[in-house]
Image (tube, rainbow, N blue to C red; front, side, top):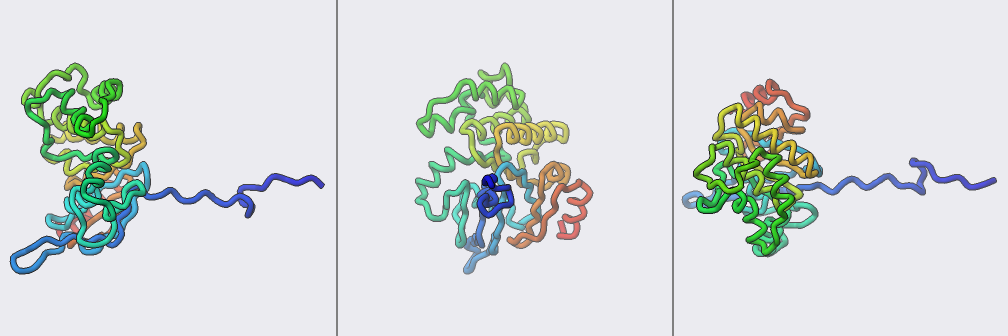
Length: 259
């Protein structure tokens, strides 16, 4: 009797191991001095975000949203717990090593754009590569400029751009290093609704094309409803989540949290 090949359920063919989280926070705390004591911005947050996922973070003012984003992106160091991005434990690394990893593997889109006024659009986009001593990829720069709707604007200065155009430059700059994870802090907060929707679609479509994990803080229920999952924060803790959310569900949950 001839031997048969093992089936997918056979002990000889173990199931594939689950994918390593793109972002892992393990009992993360972050406290800040407050007069003679301290205030806890994060009070023991644990979460795991899958590679390629799109997660929105919401919560009342002071709930810890921006602190969560800054700690997860390596811009701020937790007071306790672990932060792991792409398998690298940021809390076990030196500040210099975290800076290098953030420059190479993490993209961050700020609400305030943070463009350098005397540099052109093209120069602003490739700035992270130049700071890291890496040769800019002209093909990728052109691709990103086309993807975010900036074709023909390479030589413009930030002062010659609208708010929506400046935010698109910031997005292209965050993506130029081919980061595994992109964090965005209120990227549509200062934009009108139509421009905000366009910027959100740019973020979502480019992240999908480049197989990136997207984590976005927002106060806008319509923006959050575009995500795969919404995490709700309250008093520095995860207060719940919604999968495949609708605008109405997000709005109702925020009312429950005392928005």
